[in-house]
Each structure stands twice: as C-alpha cells, then as structure tokens.
Length: 289
Image 1 (tube, helix red, strand yellow):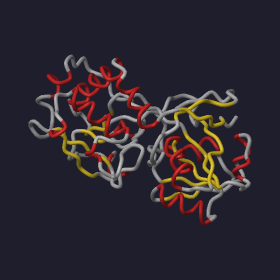
Image 2 (image 1 turned 90 degrees about the vertical axis):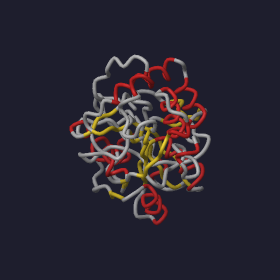
Image 3 (image 1 turned 180 degrees about the vertical axis):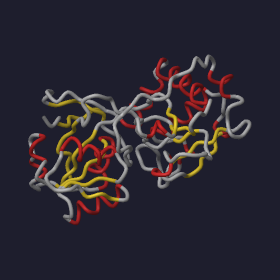
C-alpha cells in the first residue's frame, strides 16, 4: 500500500484480533487481464480441479488475523472469510470448499498446482506473474516497523533515522524488500525463515527492529510481544500499489471467474465489511517521513 510520506499521521486499520506473515519480495504489478466472465457461478462450473468442489490453498500455520485458530475451514479471519465469500459467488457451498496446505514460498513456484487458488497474503508482483497468475487484488497492505518499547529504534521519528539500525524480516516477503530498497540500512538486513523467527530475534536483541505488514505488526504489538511498539508505517515503492491477490496456476481459466466474483463483492460492500470485521477499526500509526 502506498501512503503519502507527507502525511503527518494516518488513520489505518486496527485489527481486532490476531497475526500473520507477509508476502512478496519484488515490485508490485498488475495481475492477469480480467476476462468478461459474466455470472461467476456459470463461469466457474467447468473450470475447477474437481467437479463440484473448490480447492483452496494456504500455508500452515495459518496466521491470524487472516485466519483464526489455524483452521482455514472455519470461515473466521479475513482471508478465510474472503475465500468463502468468493466460493459462494462461484456457486460453491461451504461444504464444497476443500483446503490444502501449501508453504508460502512454494505457492508461487512455476508448474502444476494442486489447488484452484491459493490465498495467503501473496503480493501481486511482476516477477511472480511470469510463472503464475493472480486475481485482482483483494487487499492492499502497508509496511510497519516494530521495535521494543524504550529501545533506541522505538524512538525513531523519521525515515532516515532507521538506516543505522539492524533490521530484519521474513524471507521472500515485501517487508524484506522494503528494508533493502526503501530503508537501505547501512547494515545488511537479517533474513528469517518466518515471522516467528523474526520476532524471537527481536526479543533476543539480534535485531533492533523488524518489518512486517501493518496488520501483522498490529497483532504482534498488541498480542504477541507485550513490550513492543509500532514505530511507524511507510510505503516502499513510488510506482506501484502493493496488493494481495489470489494465486493460480499459469493459464488457469478460473481467474476471470474469480475476478468477476471479487468485482461483485467489492460492489456490494462485502469485501469492505469483511475487512472491517477482521482487520479493522481505526488506530493512529505515524507515517515515517
């Protein structure tokens, strides 16, 4: 998500519950062209892997607030709820949705897929679009700096002040790219296998601060690391809006059907309501200028 750096502060979504990991390491890009799919249900009927079933993938554990209780099938959490809303538009009842586990870094690898689509905070990027397809974006995150309360990093008041700190993020994520390309710290950033490892490194003093998407940062500071704070939020790319998209095997004809479903969900306010329910309310987090 791009945020004007000139803004003194911004009102941003505050999650009411839970945590997550973050996406992509490359620049954002436009997803595959949207087809004129008409009725999403009619469109999807003959384009799924298994007749009468919609197979949806995500990683395990499935982090909050995107999912709840590490159970994608319960319909709780933003991405689980979005997946079921899309499934409904595509003509699939809850019982017709089958979830499969796919590690985040494997999801955007080239080749055959064992799912109709993957939903896992995956950013739409030009590099990924070379080997997979994406739906239209269903959520646009921003990046945030997390530090321990009272630390030097927690007192940073502007963007340039971050350069001298040891920073870290999960491998293969937009957060890591944001450190490298936007903050450009003097020390090479530390790369972690997952967000849990990054959090532990922060607690251990291996890094001064970690970077994660804002919903994740809000959850970490509110629930997971009691003595931590969000230093601020920032945009890392001057040319593109980062968005999460549903990921498909390259050339999957279902993409247009899902885009048609998402268009209806945006038009009728469902997506906004789900974002409000699972990610929102408002909080003031400073924009690092």
